Length: 214
Image (cartoon, rainbow, N blue to C red; front, side, top):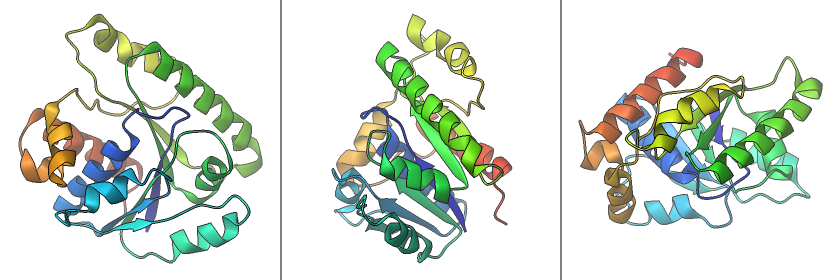
């Protein structure tokens, strides 16, 4: 089983949107996928309320006093891929995810505040890397909510490459992501073949290239 955590210092960067829709794409590809919601806001669990998602979403409440108990709960789940949606911030949950995961996805949109928060996240990861090497997870920046017709969107990829980390395929600014949440479904189920769907498939393929599980 491969564990993918989605983390960022800032909220509202697309962590839950990426978690749910990536899980839908992996499921469509034939993988057994589970999503764990470790964010107190429980956005992933809210997304799953209509019971239309093709994969289970479980609560994974984190208590800073019991990180080992949380890790054991995460590892008790079975499947090909486990995607953990986390709360904003750099703290005990972030540290636990770094220790546990095979891959950390770092979504980031084109705004300057998101880029600043990403830099803080990357700096925190660099501090943790020393004690955890060589078991440190792979890292992948995911450009999100990108409109390439704007100056900010057009230059985002170059900005992200300056962080010195691998940058994955871009997730576009697309109302299909909003509609997927509204309907309690995934982009692959409501907008198959759309630009949003194709971007998710490209991201899934990229991740499989990094972490093959077959």
